Each structure stands twice: as structure tokens, then as C-alpha cells.
Length: 111
Length: 115
Image (cartoon, rainbow over all chains, first blue to last red; front, top):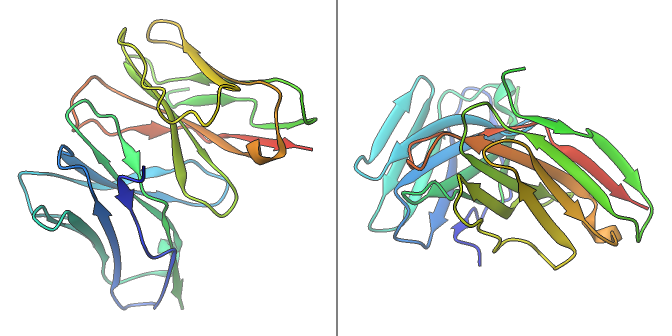
């Protein structure tokens, strides 16, 4: 039962342009949404989060948008840099923090 | 160290053998998770421990998989009679308490290869 879905396995963008990574979820009990970034041979690291009471959260070049009615969130990276190339995982959790992850999207930023 | 520690970092085992993977969470973290990532696939939830509550085992793929956690400390994931499809990186993560606002922190994973 895939409660968190990332339908794009990969994304390629040019350096300096915007990267938009999308995520959909099915469980209306999810309260908290996060994005993690993973480089090869490393564990995922936390990037940015948003709670269900907000619809936008910004941190530097990274912005997460949440549309609760559509059960959809997205991560915007602007401007994209080659060092952003990694796999990005969307995650969602209900109140008890039983976190579930999407399958990931591999972002490649070309110089 | 201050992070989530996993051992072994790499394990090669013969098909049919049992393996144990260990996770030391961050001190004070009551929640502990096991995930796995098979080659070319996403993070697959396996099991979740929260304090002294009964664990959520809904992600364990078969009865060959089991996990234990002693209190709020070390956890061990055991795979019995390993199969080649068990080859994956097994990731442990931990977080504070029950609030959904608590970020989870991952270890670097245990890379299992079944030959």
C-alpha cells in the first residue's frame, strides 16, 4: 500500500533553472510532510518540512508547497545547482510520526 | 558518535544463511525505524518502534524478517534463510517522541549482498 507516491523516477534540469519535484499522498491523517535528499552510498538527510497548517515553507533556494485538498506537495529548487543532483524522497507522517516515504526522484542538474 | 550508527556497514552472505543487522539510535530518541532500499528502488518501510508501544510490523515482507528493540536503545533486524532478493541497503533511522514534527535521522545503512 503505497501511501506516498512520487510518480517521476527522474528529472533533469539545466543549472540555474528551477527544479520541481512532485509528491502525492493518500492518507488524510498525514500531518507533517518532509523532503529528504540522498547521495549515493549515504543515508538520506533531512532537507525541508511543512506542517499541515501551512501551505508554503521556504528555506533559501528550497521551497515546499502543500495543497491539502489535492493531497499534493512539491519541492521547488531555484536556482538549481549541480550539487543538488541527488535522489529526493518525499515523506509524510501522522501525529505519531510513523513516517512513510515515496519511491524517490533522481534529480540531475546539468552544468 | 552523535548520529545513528549501523553495523555492519557491508555484509556478504550465502543464500540460506541468517544475518543480523544492528542499529544504535541517537541517544534519547524514542522512535526507531527500519527501511530498506533495493537497487533502483525507493525507500521501503519495514518496521517502526515507538517507546514501549507494540511495534508496527506492517512493512516486514515475510516471516523471515524480524526485529527487536530493547527499551529505547539498540535494535536488531534479523533476516533468516536469506534469499537473493533480500540484497539491499538496510537503513535505520530514529527520532524524538511522538510528535509528527520530529525530524528523523538516518544512519548510513548496512549493505547486504546475498550470493
